[in-house]
Image (cartoon, rainbow, N blue to C red; front, side, top):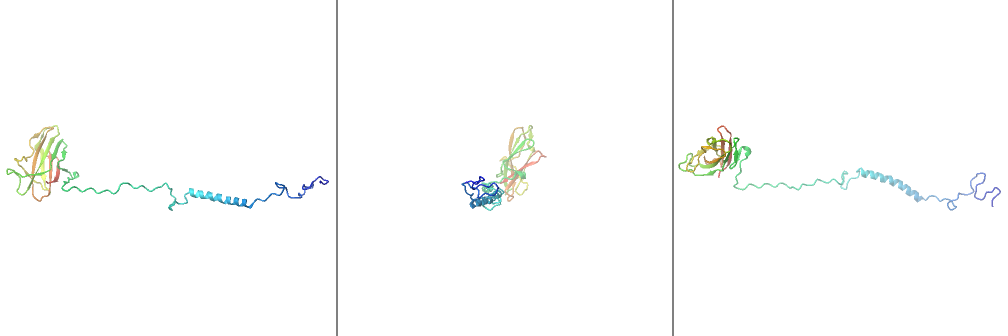
Amino acid sequence: MSDANGSGPGRPSRGGGPPDGPPPGPLGGPDPAPPRRRTWLLALAGVLVPAVGVAGLLVGAGAFGDDDGGSGATASASPPARTASGPASPSAPPARGATTPPPESAGLLPFGRTHRFAGGIEVTVSPPERFTPAQSSAGHKDGNIAVKVDVTVRNGSDERIELTTVVVRGRDGDGRETARVFDPEQVVMPLEGDLLPGRRTVAAYGFDLPPGAGNTLEVGVGVGFDGDAVHWAGELP
């Protein structure tokens, strides 16, 4: 029942004093206090979130090394590939009995090589051959070795040339100039006459070498009395 002032139970009086009981909850009772588990989860989340952020920054900056304990180099770096080539195999030795041609850098040509002079004259000296001079020969001494070479001359110029201007000399393995051998029976004779443009001629030159003077022969050929000579060299047969 209401009192004379019209206020029922649980309602504040007109004088504004505190209510007679606790405020009503959702079901008419007092509100329950927040559980302690929720508070613990919130605190844990507040600690984990900054820690995860810091770890992400460290990984991005390369603070953690690779699996091999390196200095943080990226995994894409790979060691340089080895070349497929192995050690160079040694060159095969020259066959026994093979003649080693002289180096052209020393100004010597191998026998059989053709040289073209500045005026267009071409000269070729063949490898030397041993021969036995006839009784009518001149320039050979008993006990010496007689060898001969073929000297081929081709006139590549536009003018007639005198073959007497082609000078041929020989040297033995010791560097001494050899004696010339003339043998009309075996046509071991020097060049003579003249040579028309475009024509070629061959003459045999004989040389007398003393025994023990080395096993090589050098033949020098000059075209013109004041021209430079070209030298051919090689082993004797």
